[in-house]
Image 1: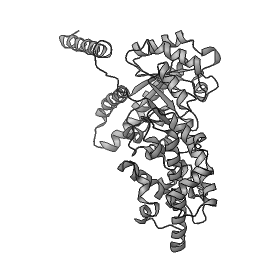
Image 2 (image 1 turned 90 degrees about the vertical axis):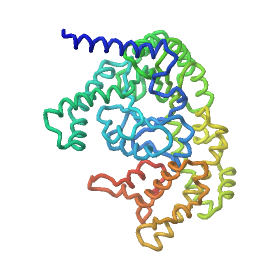
Image 3 (image 1 turned 180 degrees about the horizontal axis):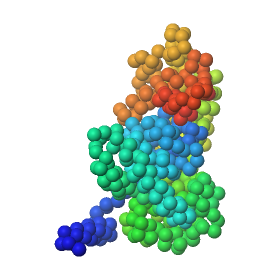
Image 4 (image 1 turned 180 degrees about the vertical axis):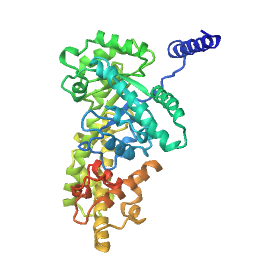
Amino acid sequence: MTSFDGAARLLGRLGRGASLAARTALPVDTNPVPADWTHVTKVDPEDAKKLPLLYPLYLRHTSAVSVGGSADVNAANTEETFDLLGPASVPVFHEPSGPRHVTPRTREQADLLAIPEVLNGDSESLVGQLGEGAEYIREEMVPEMLRERLPWLPAFATGALADFATSWLLADAVFEAYVIQNPDSAAAREANVAESDLLSPREAKQRGMAAERHLESELVYLEYSGTYGGDEAAETLDAISESLTWSRLWYGGGIDSRKRAEAMLDAGADTVVVGDAFHRVADEEAELCERAADALDPDADPSAVREWVAENVAVADSNAAAYLATIPGAPDPERLARRYLSATVRTWLRLRAHRAAADDRRGDRPDLGADLRRALGPDLFDGLSEADAALVRRNLTALLRASRADGTDEAAHRRDGSKPSADEAVATHLGLTFSA
């Protein structure tokens, strides 16, 4: 061993010691996942999971948005989802369920890449997919990026840079150690978690300690995926939380009310993750706007729309109020839900009227000029950041462009298998389209 090698190893040990001290002994927080994220909204890219028409209104109350899902997710719909969420004012990160869901576009748009590790699944779910992912990054993704950005790079340098870039991308990612406790969920099927693999609170605590101290996982995630863990989950969270000093502890599964969200936070979770409750808002909007279109004039003023919503919608029991109630920092979820549902109805009525008038003037395509903002009314954007308001305008314009004169969706008429346009992708992921 040369003196240079010895010095390098000493520096390596000192670096590891400094990192360990920062995590355990020093009064600093080196975890890249912000400690003030108490609520994360999970958006599933699969086409069946829709977004509310004015989703930036709802998402401005959450701490961050996670993009990922366990079924019918691919690189294309993941990129489309990031295109929809990336310009929003809320942080957006990526939780891929497969290595090939990570692309150069998603890496550019995601604030964080969270790589899953299932602590009570099979070895494939812990290290198998990580190995597959490392191979994909090293042999496909990084070389493609280098060819696009550094086409002049000689071949002998490509391999070394690819090795470095692969290690850097993985070092820059955060690792998410899952304990999956619902064997009937899609996540359990993906990780081969059976009834016999479920953990007691003490066993979950031990796995959490291994995740933090050996795997150095930034996140430990107690996952009930679609069902509420209740007292059992609370006991497990309490056991895990007392053993963690650096890793964040997240809970996901069945959070659809403030009571449930607060119960998991009180039990020791740093963050609750909500997915289905958000997507159900989009399902609710389609039926609501259909009823409103039969009852209200297209140019109904805001007060008339609010009155109709108050008289015809049980807002307290709505999916909109239920989702907003899961966010501890959202004030008066019922009031917010009434406001947002009214804004959605008014927007939809005016958008339909604007499109119909444009069809009369221009034939098969609506006029998408500067009058769109005037047609919607400037008060729609009250309270939205400039970025979120621009995102709403972009999406509404895309819906108009993607629609046909006969009132159906352009993407539904595609028969040649060609890639949909950006406007068609927006229409695919929003719950309200002109075919509804």
